[in-house]
Figure 1 (cartoon, rainbow, N blue to C red):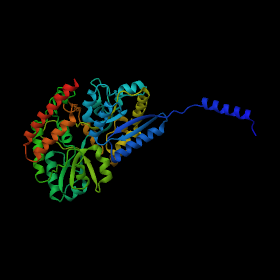
Figure 2 (figure 1 turned 135 degrees about the vertical axis):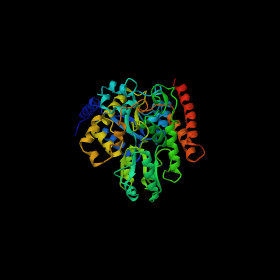
Figure 3 (figure 1 turned 90 degrees about the vertical axis):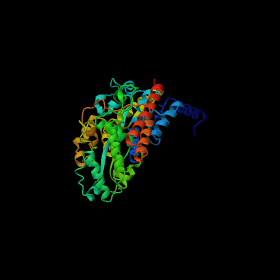
Figure 4 (figure 1 turned 180 degrees about the vertical axis):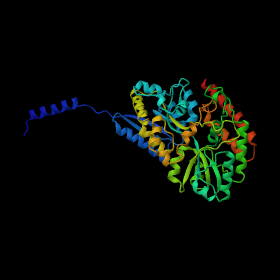
Length: 440
């Protein structure tokens, strides 16, 4: 039996050991608020988990905050309350708002430089990074889920209508004609469109090298004014109104709501985000394919190039240096070729680096998945012009709502297409002037 003295010595030794043993600090927690649901959300969670397992210093905590607008609003409210996450996913129409929020963000190029992370902006696809960069080419936010509208075709419905899915319509006249044939063959509607304001006015204009707004679509200054009521845009809306009369076109909502019409088989074609591919693949009970957007053949120079949608990751201000270091390492992780290849091939969103795009090409993925590279080809179809390198307009989410309201007025016959787009420009310009005043 140990003596009292021996016990005391042993206890002292244990205390000394406890005091001198290395302490294992808990990993720095990094909140990432995002808007990715369903299969895309599952992949977001997987990426966070893979990063967390790859090292022990940082822990990415992804938090789903609802749709794009919900996530942006939640982030703004949290910043005002001093409780913002380190990383906030913001859709592309919120870019001007985030840039104007003084003190709310920390530019990505600063985060990477200060953390000592290797970062070469030329390694990324310029059509994507240019949208989120300053005039000097410095990256403000990190491109994550970048997309552009494409045309999806229900191959089974096409064959039933006597159409060849291997020969999709290239022009709008051909497209409207095929839509009528789909409707006549038994489809509930010929086609529908997701994200009406984005796909059928903003990207439509760029695809035809027409301005969306002055000042290089807002990139050149906050004093831009809208130009979405030109002759071509009015003509296009009139064509949509005419097609809606016999249900060869079916308007089913302002954002993603129409996608259900395609998945269910009701509509034989849809124009919507390339990032919807994974959702369609998981839920459609029919064979489908992807094709480029149609264009009006009498418009000189068309097609030009499309512009991006989707969202980027903004780094919020006011965080500690150690947290920013973890964020920088996570952004490096997300840029890895295997991660980008998996993201692109699973979701349909674009690969953000040149190396990942080349890797997908080399493995023959596009050969085994015809049409999957349509989005990249549309974005890089021609060298961007002042009308087609993107748009950066303040209060754009609200402007899109205004545009949708006016388009709906044209579709229900209470306004002519010209009246609707003229009113959209007037109301939209009022929102631009409001933003210009508050952001100056």
